[in-house]
Length: 189
Image (cartoon, rainbow, N blue to C red):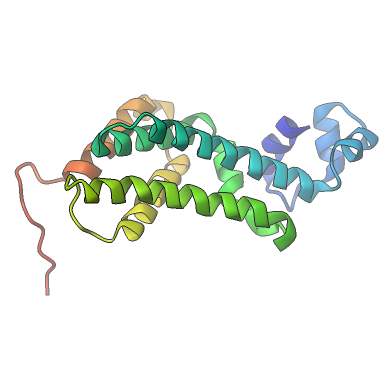
């Protein structure tokens, strides 16, 4: 039922998908559905929580390796871009359909999302504290990197190349900038 729900929510949206469509796609009965889940919203919560748990586990794996700051950030970016290509539907549902979860059902997903963001920002903070990264607002940069990587699910496609090439380019630009030679960007004004 989860796979059928993911497929239908990604294709039609949560709001436009009915329980009957889910059970029809899964070749099950409504009784089976309601035995496993309290409601369609409960399925959405389950998908959301399963996805954020996977994200936390992957980021915890990067942190546990105790890589140097630049390598750790590059590994986190690599994982994020890979998930954009490999789990496009789940990522889409996570970002676009969470608005349909009531506050009670969204509370744990929200808590875990905040924890993911904090852990991601901690990679930047650790790099700044060690002198590897410049002292820029870590939280703002963290959100920017997360947003840049998360948005990739809209456009990452096999014809653009393997996700490891895309993630390597992202990491390179984020860590080294776009300038061919060292250059300090000055805001115009």
